[in-house]
Amino acid sequence: MTQTQNGSIPGSWRRRLRVRWRNHLKPLWQDYHWPVLGILWLAAVGLGYAGAVKQIAALGERRSLWDPIYRAIQLFVLEEGIAASGVALPWEWEVARLLAPALTAYTAVTAFTAVFHEQSQLLRLKFFKNHVVVCGLGQKGLQLATDFHDQGDRVVVIEMDEGNDAIATCREGGIVVLQGDATDQAVLRKARVHRARHLIAICGNDGANVQIAVQAHQLLRETRPSPAVSPRLNSNEGRSARKRPATDDDPSKVHCFVHLVDLQLRTLVRQSRIYTQTDDPLELSFFNIFETSARALLDEFPPDRYADLASDSGVPVMIIGFGETGASVALQAAKIGHYPRGKKLRLTVIDREAEKKAAVFRLRYPGFDQSCEARFLQMDVEDADFLAGKFLQDDAGQCLISAVYVCLGSDALGLSCALTLQGKIKRLSIPIVVCMTQDQGLGALIGEFTHSHQLHAFRMINSTCRRVMILNESQDILARAIHEAYVHKQESEGQSAPENPNLVRWEMLPEEIKDSNRQQADHIAVKLRSVGYSTHPVSREESAHVEFTPEEVELLAEMEHGRWHAERSLAGWSYDPATRDLERKTSPYLVDWDQLPDQIRDYNRHTVREIPAFLAKAGFEIRRPK
Image (tube, rainbow, N blue to C red; front, side, top):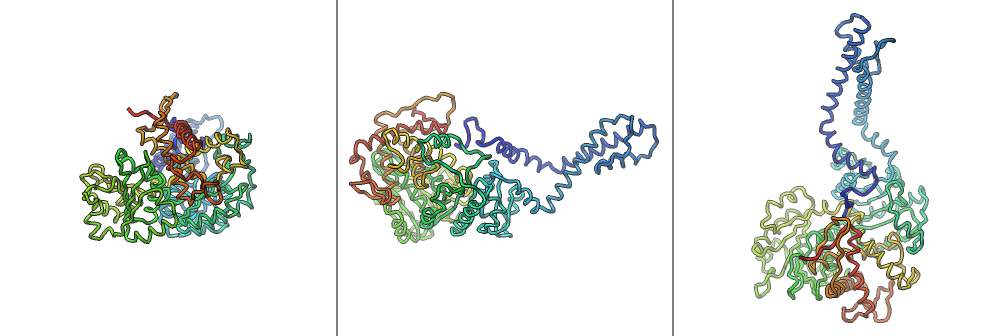
């Protein structure tokens, strides 16, 4: 969903030209740069020599053999020497006197750039606008900077460690690197953050990332006027703003993406002035690479794909390792793990500190046990109990899992663990997905250990530190369509923004409401698989219109309510039979499907009927099962 239907990269023609130059023409030029220059230098000398010989002959003069060579070399310093009135210049001379100075100038600029590289980069930066600033050049920052650059964006990286090997990698690829502290407003000004389109704070420290956002906010308040944006979706101004996509040439705000792992810090920042004021020139969003990885992992390897949904056992899944990655996978699995006829996710977690981590996790997400059935086993993957593999089967000898996700944080340990498990469940063809750091090292070799396509590698940084993931470009197409359909239905029933604060443009929504729409978008694929449908890019101008049967609508609507119930429970909402209160996070609808009022059940039915329309806006169509 990152491309248009004709396969072109979305964006301005300038970006498309930059992409073509960087991805196709520039590598060729770098490979054959000096040989081509050498040939052109020889050609210029040869043409100059031939032209000089013809001119000397036309003048009837006799000169030494070295004189034409000398005259040809003079062209490189803009000296023509023997031109005379009344004598036509040979075409060789005309070409040489243009080619030679051009080669001289190009070579001089290349040499100057090589010697004074940093100064030339700063000079180049003076002309940047609508670019991307990445703060922090660890593995994640390098991958992000490279991907934005490959997609045609101008990229500036701020890195404090002068000894970071990635600095040379970026500069060789054409990315501008500033050495300095990104929390220093002077450094942000030098990176022209006030003229940028995106600012990404992805240092290794949450506090530093927040400080970058604060300093950028202050810089923008001083250097850039606040855009006036109407929050009302049903006003003409709001609708025109919604329909007019932002372009690279006219950004209304600088969009700052702050990487935060600490949930409490994320909540604190969301309550601050920098986040709540809608007229600021800085638009603030948060992302967590572990949450993004979990979302991408379960989209590529969904648990229900490998389970028998016709059985009564639900979807049994195992997660090995309950650090940041494993906990994020468990949370995302609980959000999307709602299947036909009330089947839930059955989760088994193995970690050497399982009891302690489970207690902390349940305090953070008190609704977790309502969303899935979970058991935590305290076990080290190098212990004899784990190597014996008894936890894989119940007392009757039946396998307790349909998919395994290994999230140990170490590529070597994760691969070793996966190979141990593979020996135990090889005959069952149960998929084992290993979360690897990147596609280098062991991540690149995992295919050699694969038997019957049972072992899979999910390369976290390569899969998630990408432009399309950070900007939510593909996912937000569906999420926006869901929100717009919600607003349209609520307004058709007579509601307005004062009664419902969520009846605003997508850009004006709080981030938690945006994420709620994204979670609903995530679950669409689960719903479609449950009734045997699949999605495909629209391949013809008029695609077939699909309508779900009444039985399918009822089943999908119940699944949607189960998903919504889990989402609210995990977000800290509780049941109140009297009122729905946004501040207190209470709702009378946190009940089973059979206990819902008819009006709410009809709303869920209406929502799932709109799924084909949501997908059509994203360039996809649904195909009926054969």
